[in-house]
View 1 (cartoon, rainbow, N blue to C red):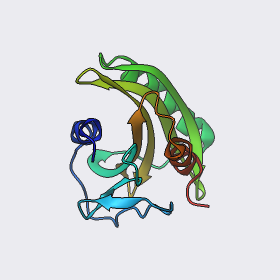
View 2 (spheres, rainbow, N blue to C red; view 1 turned 180 degrees about the vertical axis):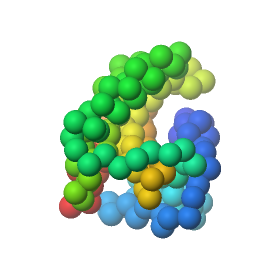
View 3 (cartoon, rainbow, N blue to C red; view 1 turned 90 degrees about the vertical axis):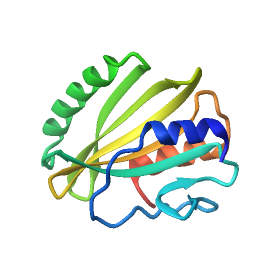
View 4 (cartoon, rainbow, N blue to C red; view 1 turned 180 degrees about the horizontal axis):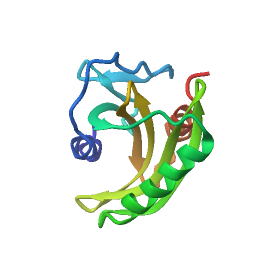
Length: 153
């Protein structure tokens, strides 16, 4: 995996909980080093990481509840020094709501474009994070963003 993606992957490493790992249903994407929580496309230009956190996050039963969280999340992310261009929006997932955040993150002098899905998994925060270099033009970028926004098709 290219060094910039390794750095980004390390930047988002957090604890996991017992739920099943994500299966990325996109052709050519494979687990990184056999880790079913981290997936890369064949070119190494895009990376998806699934994480489960010990932080409580209730399910959002309505779009309005998800929107309230999205506004708070946008303020929180926007307040970080290495994060810019933050946009958040509610997204519907199987009868419940999550929040999708998109932002630019800088690490070691490299800018990355991040799409991060926030979901409640049995009352705990679960994130699915897609990343690529900020101006990456590989076809994997749109494929990854569509997967995060709409799920598997």
